[in-house]
Image (cartoon, rainbow, N blue to C red; front, side, top):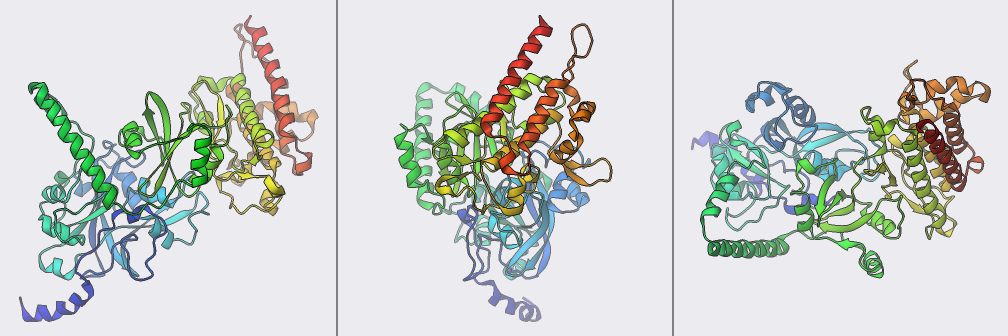
Length: 615
């Protein structure tokens, strides 16, 4: 080595502390790690490189919403031209195959203790730091690092907030630079990966790959899916080194081979696979990180008291039911469709509110409340298994202009009555009584038969011990503000009448087909649907003249002879009912019992009218 070059680089060797980055293991699946005693791989990769800033690469796998060059470059805040070039993609708007690996070029820079590539993300409903890190960014960031880079506590973040997201990257160390490494690639590990397989794909030695991640060698070191490895590269990664997961090109060949062997060989092969599976399971149990989420003992005792109606599932069962949590079965950021013993279910990965929701739903048994079948905890995450609702959420159902089912007054009234009956059970018949606190059209789910069930009980609170008038310690969400009662917004006071107010807004959405909060057509000011409807109704003498403006045009019914059926009285009754729920003073609002009885009468009248016109 040139002596002068040696003198330049020698001081940096003291910085390296072992020379390479440390593999995080399952620490990244937790959200309360600490680095008070020194940098931790549970956050990001340590600033120990030869340069404070460098070019680096990440591997991202396409998923719904992020399956084009344009969408991925926006998510990652990278140059779309460079992204297209390195992946050999000509059309930036071309939809790529699901689960296709995409090379993402980034600028990696030191920020405090850690290297990071900076991007931003707008938080959506039902998302949190954990789901952003592990579902949206697929492990290319961590819950702890998102928390560190934002001023918001992870349990109290409003939807619509723009978050700073640091991505996992690193620059080569001095020793790596001397050995010819120019770039580090952050690679997402999958179920069948190993250090040997990854090194073969990217044409690096197993030893170099192992040392780059703090392993002593490439043999016997356990790695986990949904975590990252750094791959040292001498040149830019090639698009030919990427793949699309889930391709079954070799499957037919496998079955041809299997079909040519004897039954005895198949039996031996099965035994070998089974033994290998048991060994893998044993090693995983011994080597895995300590689990963070534990099913509370009071829930376990409660489960025993109801004859095991709430099942404790193994993670392998949920994995098989959802086809390995495949993108094809993904319903939202954290919810997957699955099939358990012939029954279709929804599998949701939960955060901090999981134990509370389990404890609440375990007590309830009502047709209009979502059914919880079982729970599972795995590697610090909790999974809840719910009954599957084919028609999804009410807000999406109302937005679907092609659905003929949404054109029926009968269906909308029945949905309103289902929600009211669910609240009636919570307020009057549950022991103790509960206030849901988060009633909105996103949390009302519809079955195949268009029957409504209330879901999402993470913010629910008991009215036991006369605490229903105390201030709520739960911060309100941005999307929910059109559903929140004045006394809750102004004083934090929560009673069963808080749910009544929210129900009034849901009823307005059913009548008008509009969102609870939207931009006003006039001056662009954001207004509440409830405010607009109440002011539009005004004097009852003039209310009928405004019905055509307020009522969803899809609800206009025509007789077989061609004339429009007059349903103004029905619409007016429902609007008056909703306004009775929206009284600013809680004591003047209707009770849930009055709402149920009124809706039942309206439903009977509507059915009689439709029968009369169809006879």
